[in-house]
Amino acid sequence: MLPCEGVFKKATATFIIGNNELCGGLPEFYLPNCISKSSTSRKINVMILSASVIFRVLGIAFILAFIYLCWLKKKVNEQVSSLKDDSCPNGILKDNETVVAVKVLHLVCDGALKSFIVECEASRGIKHRNLLKILTVCSSSDYQGNDFKALFYEYMDNASLERWLHPNATSSHGNELPKNLNFIRRINIAVGIGTALNYLHHQCRVPIVHCDLKPSNILLDAEMVTHVGDFGLAKFLLGSSLDTIANQMSLVGLKGTIGYALPEYAMGCEVSREGDVYSYSILLLEMFTGLSPTDDTFRDNLTLHSLVAKALPEQVLEITDIVLLQERDSHFGPYSPQHWLSESNDIFQECLVMVYDIGVACSHEVPGRRLSIRGVAHQLHQIREKLFALGLHEQDELLTTYI
Image 1 (cartoon, helix red, strand yellow):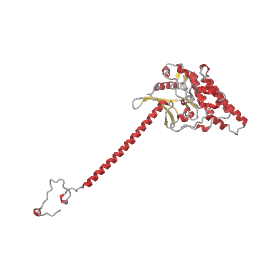
Image 2 (cartoon, rainbow, N blue to C red):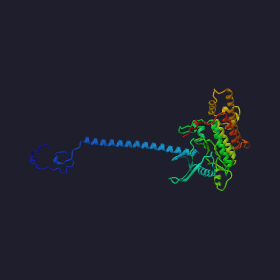
Image 3 (cartoon, rainbow, N blue to C red):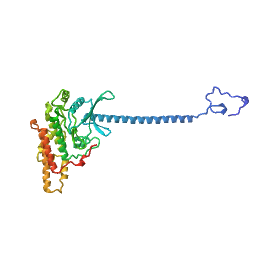
Image 4 (cartoon, rainbow, N blue to C red):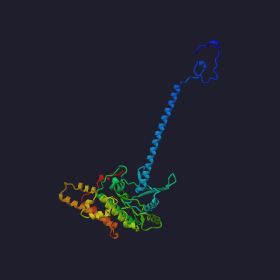
C-alpha cells in the first residue's frame, strides 16, 4: 500500500462500502481473497473433464447394457423356437433327489392346446414299462395372465433315440453322444417299441394309435430301456364319452410326421393300427441303415423302403450303418478260427436280412401285406436269440449317458 500524501496524510478512517468487487488488501479490511483468471480457468477445465469422463462411462455402460439385452432377447427367442419345434420334454427340474423332465406347451402354436388335452387323455389309462410316464400336469396362468400348461415326465438320462442315431444333426450345444449303439442294443430298443405298440393296440382298455412314431419320440432311460413318448396326436379307436373330445382333436391336421406317416393318410384314410406299424417299420429301417427317411439321398422316387428292398438279400452290408459293421469286425477279429469267423459272419448277415425283411414287409405299399405288430415282436425275439448265440451282448461301456 502506498503511503498517504497531501490531504490524505491525516486520514483516520477508510470506507469500502459499495465496492463489492474489491478483494485482497490489509487483513483489517476483511476482504475476500483474490482469485486469478488462471485459477478459475483451471477449475472450469477440471469440471469439464470430470463431466466428460462421467458421460463416457455412462455411455459405455449403456452400450454394454444394450448389447446384453439384445443377446438376452436372442437367447429367449431361440428357447421359444425350440419349444415350438421340439416335441420332447424341453426342461429339467430337480427337487431334492427327484429329477423330472418338463414339457412346456407353447400355446400360441396351432394345435398346442389340443395336443395337451389329447396327451392327458391318453395317459389316463395306460401303464407300461416301455411307455413314458407322465407324473403330473400343470394347467394355470403365468404372471401376465396368459394360459400356462406343462407336462411333467420321468427324466430320461439317455435322451432320445434321435440323438443316438444322428448326434451331429441334433446336438446344438456340443454335448454329443457317441454313435455307438451295437446290434443287440438296437434289437432291444426295437423290441421295446414293438412291445409298447402291441400294448397300446391290443391290451389297453381303449385301444390307442400313437400316430407319431419317430426317433425323437423314443426316449431311453439310464439302463437304455425304451420308452415311447409324446401322445399329442394319439387316436382312440373305441371312444367313450370322455374320449370323444380327444378323438375329434386328434383328427385335425396331418396324422404324423413326414417320412414316417402312412401314405394312405395323405389320401384321407382313417387312422388305424396299420399307420403305427408303417411308422415303426420306417423307424426300424432307419435304426439299422443309419439313414433318415427325409435324408437328401432320397429323391426321384427313391425311398428308404425301396433302397432296402433293392439291397435284399445279397447287398445288405452295403446299406448297413457303418457302426454295426465296425462292431462285427472288432468282435470277430482276425485271430478267430477261420471256420467260426465264416459262420459268424453268415449269421450276422442273416440277422440283418431278417431285420430288413421285417421293415420292408411292414412298410409294403399294399396294406394287406403288412405284418402285424405281434408278428414283428416274435421275429425280433428270434433275431436276438441268434445274436446271443454269437456272443454279442450289451456292453457296459455303452451305458454312457447323455447328460
